[in-house]
Image 1: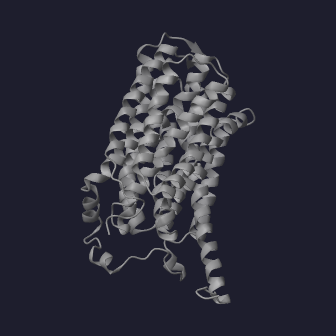
Image 2 (image 1 turned 90 degrees about the vertical axis):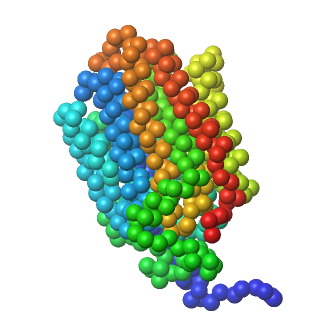
Image 3 (image 1 turned 90 degrees about the horizontal axis):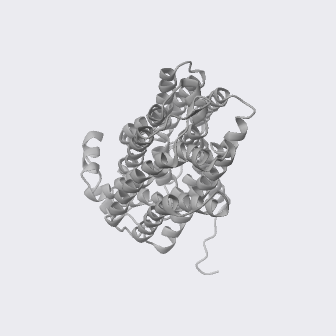
Length: 441
């Protein structure tokens, strides 16, 4: 037929080899990212074991969990530099090695201080993973599907969150929490070896053509100077920062609830068992995962970023007054409310695409890392802040060595989360619309 492109057997084999290579690399990165989310959310399910084992207050428990986020936040910009200079392969191999050792150390910890050391190394190791995946997606996949790939990444990554909720709660009835974390550490070491053998930084390293090509004008705009100068040029782009505030305000509060305080809240205020409370977190996390894929796909489909993100932030913010003031009890409405909160919060995925599309393609790792820092600064601040607020009005009740907080204690913490959400809403108003294409070049 006229105009039909007929591929030779050699071209077909090349296409198959390229697809096999990029999806094999993506699979290794995603398996690693699943563990990232597991470590992020697991403290909420094992919180009562940690409080009883190490005799911690809510503030100290929040600090133990938040160490991960402090380290993660501090490493986001260095992670972007590493991704743009050394590539995803180096990041993923070294990151898995460090996280594996940290998880084993956490499982073996004989004191609160040693548990903090283990948590520190876990945070340090996993901090480079997400930016590496975003960089990998930008060089191995076409830019027209970047929003979709971002959503797919978070969908699979959140399987780790789901595993850290209901399944982990069930696993704890068979294995000690220490055994679980040591096993996860061993899996990280296996993935380090797999990353070394399979992952490559870009298609050209394997003899393939890059899926994204830009016209000659792009070369004249290539970033100059060393990585310090390039990082400075990225951070001076003011339209990059609204995404930072969206993540700080919305995901800082959401991760604090899903990853630490949600299970204790349902246990203490609504009288649910750890397993039943974890079911609500599972619904919330699954909705978060599916929502990330939906928002990425829908945004790519309609060619808009800003209105979709604004609707997401508004829905998330609105869900908190409903949780705090509506008369509800565990059951159908409760599952719907938690599911809606997770779904709405997942719209933050669009901040990554918005950041990548206003910067030079070669500096996409740094741009995404700057925005992603907001998420972990917000969570690192909110988790211990919530614990401090709850401790301030705690009545002194203990059950099996763990503190039990009243509804008022949690309500006061939720007010802080709402204030964070309002910061996110302001940030969403200031996001630059890119129409799903790179507007830098």
